[in-house]
Length: 498
Image (cartoon, rainbow, N blue to C red; front, side):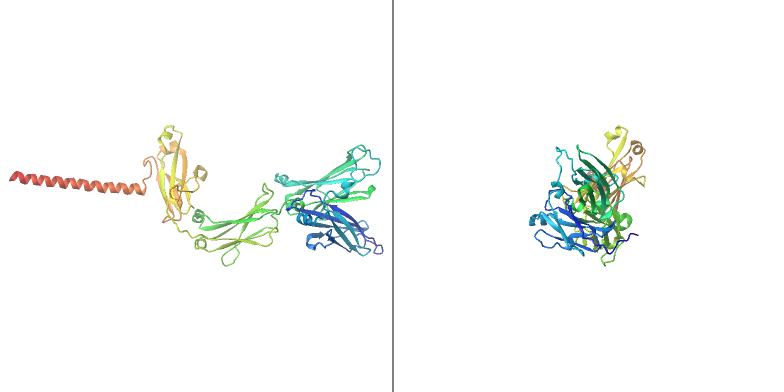
């Protein structure tokens, strides 16, 4: 345990943390600046901030990290997040970092634009430097594309250039805490005739980066009494806050028919991080439902998406009861909700189903046989089509089903079709194939049409009615002719007798 003499007292030394996100600002970006208080005793200190016009910066805009014992004295840092709008409206080019300490109060200007003091002290490359020179420090943050790789990692690079002599120290902090690993440092090496350069690369995970963890590169050059800190964070990367969108997907009738339950899906997109996400489904009485949350990997635009699924009784869904999806996230000012219930269909129309056998031209090739199932004039558009082969389900990857489309002449009705391709030998052998259609407007929800080589197509209800009508009409015609023949014969017989 390290003990510090309580008799000695030292005032803090203040150093600026210059902007680390470049010089360009837009109205959607934010800027991270800070200051370092070093070598003070005792450890009680208060850091605060003022704008250039001496108005006080609210405490919600900055973070003061705990003091850290370094040798025989203490150090601490404070980070200020300031929006570009505030900088532009106030025309501020610096802010004040203030330290209140028992030995004395101090303050320092922290620039908001440019590279700060270090950039003004760059050593020209075309000049031979024979005296000590301060380093020029730069920081490069990772791009979104880096995190799309298989490792889901990015790299922060901190560079110090044009310094002399070569004795230099470079450290990494994570949320103000010293890191002992996770980075590689190269140098110092000569970058000119009399100056040196140093480069260090820190690997960060997508989780740490997109939840706005603060990473800091600390460069200290003892000979020139130089110390500088550069901050890297997703918050100051010039990336606007994610726009979270919430949507719900109702259960399909086919799913309800198959599982006897209704699956509710709540989709969340546009999240900068998935760590603080909560998705909860509740039923009409406010009771929470068991919700299964699935988070996808980072999207091409650098955001995350997720779904929350819950199952309810088919009867509750069919009765029109309302269900609520509530989403909580750090990027949302308050939890947001989306509601869903079964819509009352005013137009229920059962489908007509037609099954067509393979074309003769295709069969003549003796390679394959394609059967078609046409589903027409149904409403609503939610329909399920399956195939059976000799009464057994055909795998779904063996046939295609189109999406429902409006009828050209009746936009309120829909049609869909499905095709099944089988071996020509199966068709020629007389195997039966059945198109099964599931729709809520059907009397028993299911309609089947079967076709095989012997039937050469399924006779539908309209065709069957036409055949019955023709049979009846033929019978009446035959009876009428027989009656006419009988009457003529009787009349002729009477005439002959007279």
